[in-house]
Length: 354
Ligand SMILES: NC(=O)c1ccc[n+]([C@@H]2O[C@H](COP(=O)([O-])OP(=O)(O)OC[C@H]3O[C@@H](n4cnc5c(N)ncnc54)[C@H](O)[C@@H]3O)[C@@H](O)[C@H]2O)c1
Image 1 (cartoon, rainbow, N blue to C red):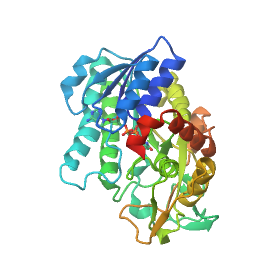
Image 2 (cartoon, protein in one colour; image 1 turned 30 degrees about the horizontal axis):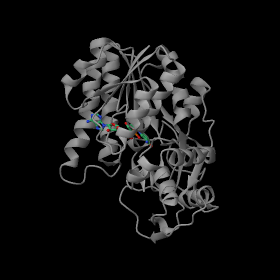
Image 3 (cartoon, rainbow, N blue to C red; image 1 turned 120 degrees about the horizontal axis):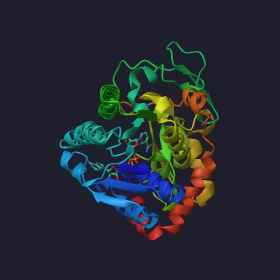
């Protein structure tokens, strides 16, 4: 099996590359990355140590793909993944060029070689204005979704693929949704096997968490290196909640998808930790304090940030009924593994995460 992973030194890409090399030692794994995400150079060392091959390239540059041989599978994981991206001058071009034009360049490559495409999309394709109006129940320091909702595709189990797409979704979400449309068109017109995974929050080791992306690692890092944090919005109590999927659970799903690509035909799946793996910021604080032994100062800001959501939970029903896949790693284990990674790679990570 030959695989190209764009963004192969990012959190998702490097983890998948290392796991592919571990489970399929004969596989050839090419990681294309421009190393623009701080910390991706640290992940690059993990990829090389596992036997992956690095291509220093940019998905915005179509000819950079000419340096990669024909592969069976392309995993599109190169992105500017911050939902806040695009508002600062200069950032907008990079966001659109990387997330949309980069995916289109990836599709040209897949078309040329008839490679299958696995796309890492996002829950942020669902519009925030209607999601923010979902009926909530507050329990144990956390917002939950009520089962009594006005819109289709939302229940206490979370958001399903039937949730309506009309509305604003952020510039980031728009680039990912537009990419989905191109993937489906390329798949249909040029017979490229493909699958689209709309992921909720993903986490685990090798995630270079920062203020605008990678909240689970950010939270743990600020506890570990005794920094400061803020609860922003919704009364400033940290009740906003997300489901969290461990990266190895995602790998397990991607393996199944590769083995069953002929069944999938550019299907779209919501993929996440699900209701069982949902956690609020206040609960996350408790876990991080317990694991690190550190209590840190957390400020409160009452005002909501535009585009923020009180709660997002992935309803995995569709993918589970297709594949029998479901998340197996709970949040406590995810947090413990992140903590162990900090201890092991402390010196390098301190410069980036503290
Ligand atoms: N991490 C999450 O919680 C999450 C959730 C939903 C969806 N996703 C999606 O998963 C994918 C991977 O996200 P991630 O968390 O690994 O992000 P990441 O920032 O850790 O990794 C992205 C990688 O892409 C590289 N990159 C950026 N611009 C590039 C360019 N122009 N050319 C080549 N490489 C470039 C970066 O250097 C980085 O190594 C993204 O498509 C993201 O939208 C992530």
